[in-house]
Length: 203
Image 1 (tube, rainbow, N blue to C red):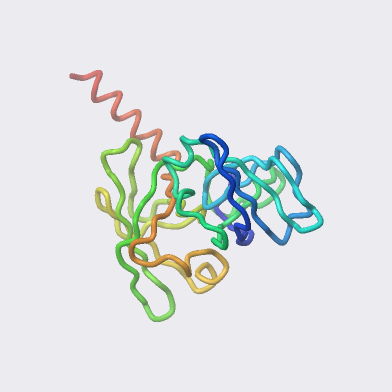
Image 2: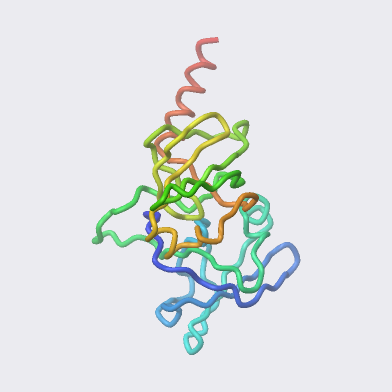
């Protein structure tokens, strides 16, 4: 479980393909504090640490084919900047929203607007994929960042980014055409599923 409050960004330093799996090695400032079997969110995708190089503050995670197909990990290259967050502590403050680290699908940035002090990012996604729902002022995770929805239409939404978030996450790398991971609010997904089941039972 995560909160969507990004700790820092990691750099991809190596990519290895083994059968249908991909092994990503990343470098991060707290790499010497990590341990094998630890869960971490990478651009909002929960991956397990399988190898640690404490001396160089590097670690390796493995993504299977399903993960590669449903997320933007296939766009990662050596040098890519990735948002990372370790799993939440039960005795810590809950500053974001509940993020499971289970990416629902990807979205494509269509427009970035400079609001003179902040930025408005617009995204499109496949509304036919279930579950998929946004509501104005609702929560959404984009590349693991907990954000509030501004505009909301079927298959479209926007978020506002303050300078701090723009600087400390990889949002400064997102431009029109960029593909990002999105995770819809878990409570919204449950409500949507319950409504679908109710509608089916009344037919």
